Amino acid sequence: METRVAVISVIVEDIAGVKTLNDILHNYSEYIIGRMGIPYKHKSINIISIAVDAPQDTISAIAGKIGRIDGITSKTMYSKY
Image 1 (spheres, one colour):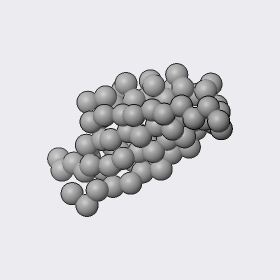
Image 2: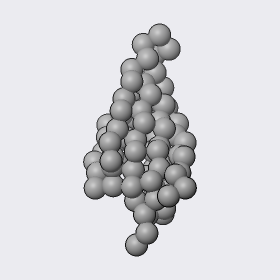
Image 3: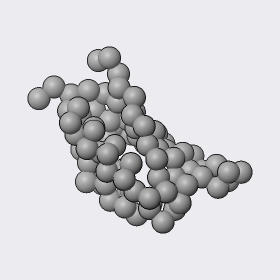
Image 4: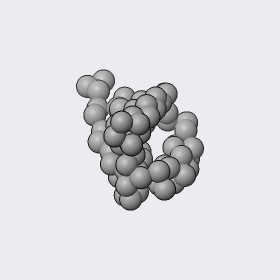
């Protein structure tokens, strides 16, 4: 199956959802190229970038599950390749 490279950007405004977020990322770990988290204490949020290489429907599933967590927002940007 053809895969796409994408970055899922996540902003955590409520840390209550972090366990759920980590569970989702663990379940899809085979598709994750890498991730970077930045705590931004001035605004009391955390910013996470997750690079993935997966079929498009899998990327959509990951982003959709993350986006349904209360206090967490996400957006996805796809590579042309």
